[in-house]
Image (cartoon, rainbow, N blue to C red; front, side, top):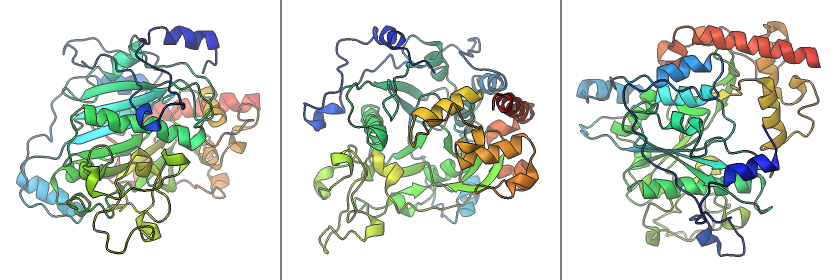
Length: 440
């Protein structure tokens, strides 16, 4: 990570005058429109060469596979297959012939090509569009250089067709030099641009919003089920009492072989009919929100607080914004192995340490103390990478015995089946940890 002010200024020279720095002297309802949209065309020739940008090591295996044109094998709709798929999640298939469209969105920053490629491989050909937002500062206001600017090869990789031959990929930029909001407020303010992009991309009330961090992924089979099965959370007809579906995600720490006993409840899905900015808000109540209106629903407006702030005869409940995808409690978990969290899949330890120093829940000494002292999650990664099974039994996020071998085929990410990837990434992690150990 380069915290070089001149470098950042050089990166920002290309921003047109129309991109205004977000100013909190103006009304907040105007703020979300202050973003710059680069060229949206991501259709590249089928015979294009593979782009690697700044990818290193085993990540190149993933990028090569992700950018290789191929058929979408599960695209043809087979009623018997769809009925069996729905049954796996205790859902019904009633003959739907057109899949619900899926609009994906995520913040993007120093995420390595590992989770980006793994997400692209898992969701190839599924998304109507993939909308990313990148900021010029971290949640804690540390200056950072934009990685996916309009003239970068990194952006060309994202738009190379890796998410699918017809998936529209965009990166919008959140440029804010003010000191407020910060921390989670800043993070969720960035996410508000995702829903704005979904609307610009034509999202309708019967489309699915899929909001994630880059390293959080629903399984392909589960998303296909959400597109075609009868899902109670998608059938509110404007009610929106409890519309969110949360993942039951397996957590891999640093590499494919490091499966932990933790479970992650992200990402989340919400039908367009219940998303603020997509649905008709006139039928729904006005609400209070955290972070002076930028954040998630306040107590009294959510299922877990019994909607105590609303009249008892309420029939239409609050719409969800981007922060509610992440923070509002009450999402239904339809299946305990419906996703993956690819935590800390970084190309080197320096980038990992910088993350813990400058992003959410910062550790100021992250670059100066032993890796395992930064966060308990990292202890599991160290134990796995260095094969310290005895020490791991004392971890708060202990490893699953057998790792990948403990999972059935349907619970393994598509990317982990690419020949040589699992072994190469495990070796990289081991080498990274051994090198870092020598410094401390």
